[in-house]
Amino acid sequence: MSVKREQYKLELTNGLPPGCDSWEQYESNPRQPRPTPTPKRPVPQWPPREQRKGKWIQKYIDQLDPETEYDQIIRTIAFFGPSAFAAAVSYTAIFAVLTQAPSGAAAIHFGGKVMRRGHQRFYETELYQLEWVYHGSGSPETAQSIGKINRLHAAIWKHVPGSYSAPFEGQMALVGAAYFEALVRKIVGARNDVNPKVKAAWPEWCERVAGHFVTEPSDGSRSYGINFPRNWDELEAFFYWFDGIAFEEQSTPELLQKGHETAEAFIDQFCELWFPKYVFTSVCSREKAVG
Image (tube, rainbow, N blue to C red; front, side, top):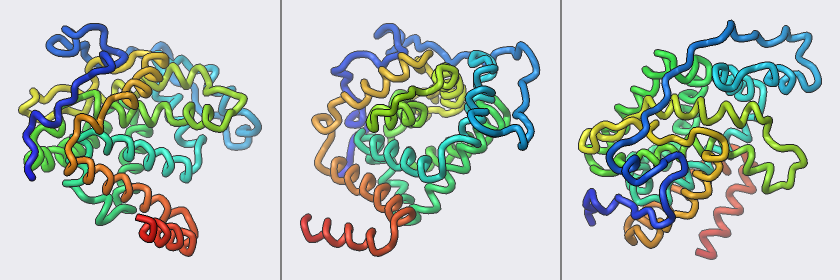
């Protein structure tokens, strides 16, 4: 069954995306991504290896300016923070969320890589993100790296027209990555919150990264950075706003099935990579018996 372009367009029954100030701004006059700010000073370097003890990461981040040194803040937490396991959990959860949207289900299912070569897709995605972190959100290297992804997306939207026409859907990938640590802390009841400097840096970094992505030509090749959440409060509100969209009511049986299949493939890839083989096999066999 074919799907017309218009069927991917969602009705925003829960209001405007946080970060967008008016319907006029959302529909015809979007706020453009902010340019890279002028540095106020040379970025302080990481301390020598022998001094990286105790809570050195927090002390180091506390001396940085999130308005101009956000790249270094994100670089620090990425290279010295969560484990590879945590990164894999984030990857799986975020992409499973994205398959709820009709366009996400259609595009990811058509690409099909998560079902054919799931581990390769995971590692390639992580390497792309590490490139952006290492070189900085506004760097030519990051722009070139994301240009490759835009070309991959172009190969999909030629066959699934309309699936890359809603910037807020693409923004959720970055918002989810930024908010994931805070979400996990809430779920487990952690006593400490995310460092305020990290909170301030995330929207700055994500907005510049999003600015390199573009929608398909039929949508005007708009930047994915338009109307991006400008601060942590807007970013957090965006996460829950997206989660509140009535995706199922606005989808079709075919797209719901595609979304289910791709979400399941992401979860299977994670389980196969991180769980002992006998546990993974046992769980899959039980699911098939029940389903």
